[in-house]
Length: 484
Ligand code: NAD
Image (tube, rainbow, N blue to C red; front, side, top):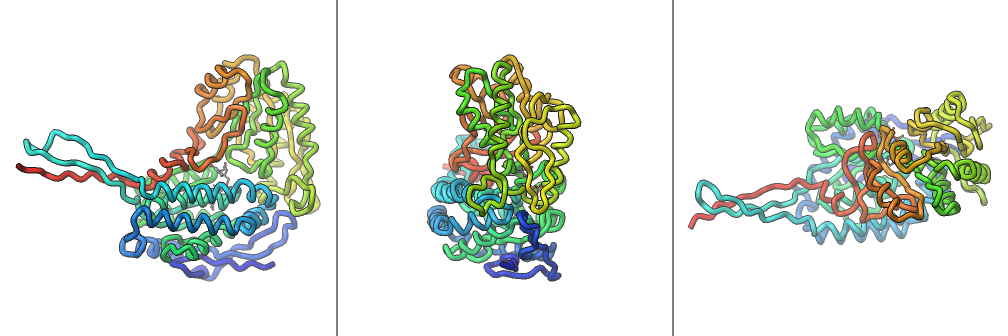
């Protein structure tokens, strides 16, 4: 099938202003299967103008929270109706099995839209007692207003779900948006925009401009009428965005990468920890920000645990995810394939023990073998850097203090998991690790009601939960003089 995808601006599909396009490549076959518009600054300008019109003068501005909530519920129903189609769009674009987005990403998106529908009319202000105004009493209160037009910049690994984390919250708050999906995965954002139109959102509330980060993303960050940039992606791009948008005093929320530790104590349920670590390593080919790629294991069980992880890695059937029985597809793009292989070679060169997998040289398709390193230390590149592929690094520790120190010895701070049956230790370690989310005997769940985000190089700000919607509002204070 040849796809010819265009921007979605003010309710209509439009080509790039200069007619240029970006080829879409299938990671299984390496064949071009279609193209999307290569957006320009002029396209961004057009989309921002449409979003601003709705925000300031359009039908959208007239809707109250409950009415916005009703539209969000309708959109949730339509996304749910199209579950299989949306899962296929996201899966095929990156060579992932559609079963994962069908079970996780799309239901999570639906749940976020439904949760946000409830928040839309709960974004309340406060009444604040004050000392009055030069001896005269006053009434001071605050209201929550939409922050403005949002630029939402999204990566390729879970395109629909991450788009909806932003979209649901900002729509609940009454904002309008220009979405810039990843140049590799524009499909689901465009379908989502069409569903929003079907649900009855006024044209111009949700716009999608496809294209490159250095062109469309940058134009959004520099645009004078974008009030907030909500970005999910790599720390490198996040840094650049902070420089460009921050200097213009825009709100900037950054959801960045991770090198999340899985801390396995010797009293943990071996089987549960093994299952959890395997999931945390290999789901979506390891292309997950919260991938549990640093596996810290207590010495008494370390060798046995590493060997069991290696067995699990070797048992994963890699291939075309559309074929029955296949558990893992290719990584999403050539650059990612080269990056993962480069890190595997670095792990070998720096002296870690390769227990499973290794550098991959497939004939066709960007397939990487699930890889496990043991006897690693926390200074190695495979322990410090986010690889974003199916590569696990096992590091041994002796004491709880050492485990916490190792976990925190990272520039990242997104998520951590603690595997133990000691309840007191579980809480102690959960409190001591410097991350945005901790799972105890589970991988941190992504629930619509829970905040999500990181510390340090993993980002600034939180998405999800009620606070996620509040983050798309400005608090305005109003004071009324009350003379006798
Ligand atoms: P990326 O930073 O290369 O790209 C992300 C998005 O930003 C894309 O749409 C891209 O076109 C755009 N972009 C790139 N450079 C830009 C710039 N200078 N200005 C504006 N926009 C720009 O990241 P990626 O390779 O698509 O995604 C992988 C990264 O995303 C990993 O680091 C991963 O950990 C992170 N991620 C984080 C979370 C989270 O919730 N914390 C979730 C998923 C992915």
